Image (tube, rainbow, N blue to C red):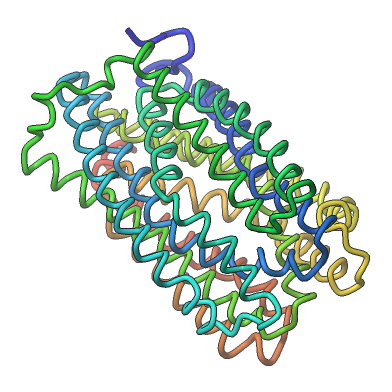
Length: 449
């Protein structure tokens, strides 16, 4: 039986209250998820120096590209599972879980092979500085060797969220994050493994999360456990889940590809600029957690209510989240205006003026646009949950093209200022496109009447 005390009912009751209750554990989960890489950055920057920090920064966008597709697949598969839960059909729910397991296993194998063969050549193609390319390769190749661990956690936590449980994935992630901090320091400072030690610590810690998720599902959430008969899920369900998974996977992959292209432009600005941008992006990832948590809540809320045919709740939920994003962006903007230099020095351990100034400038300029980014992500996840697979994919293509233009045309002229303004401009364009598509959807238009 599923533990009702820690699940949220999205199908009835106060909308914003349900979204916030569900989002709080997601926020805490995101907080500890970011600790994986941020603790890596802090320990590497303070113990190994700016060169090692730059190596992680140069490799991270490539890692995001390699793993983004797999993680997007996991999110897409959980959307179909949430819709099955919303219909109240438990047999369909189990078949959805069985199908997700099969697709996830196949995808993890493919991504691992491609990553192991393609990481170093891709870094060389992107003009990664010679003094950091070997270290960056050792870090990323270790992580991508265990793609199945990362995908397994994303899939297990996604299945739990699909049935309204965001609490237990949070608890498991908190435990593994504490282990990650201990192992980071041990492998880097005591064993002397360099930045490869940070990757090993991450893999071991996330592996613990997977084990804990599986044990919990087996004991407390048995509605997600398929039997042998459920693996005969049929071509229609397989096709639905595959297209939904590929849609989300390609969307994440295209977004990450844009970041890789942009990184190629940043790489030409020198290793100190890379180190400063790496630090700024880590702080950025923490600051957007209140926004990404709400968008993840909508990834469960929307497909459940779509399955129940409650389109007005979907429209109202998007409106509530827009207000939420604007309010949160105002708080974050004020905070970063004063705290950006302190956070940069604290996380990077650097006293180099280039590192401190570039990171602080990036954070202060981008912060007001978090409201736009929040609306963008919520709308994109809403459209995905509604079954509109192509529109979010098109928005990702817009992002990729724009980042290519910035990387090859504007960064050589305007240097780091072009890097700073690249994403805010793109977010505004994408948000307009996605909102236009949402309000033109027939069931949403009908819900207004």
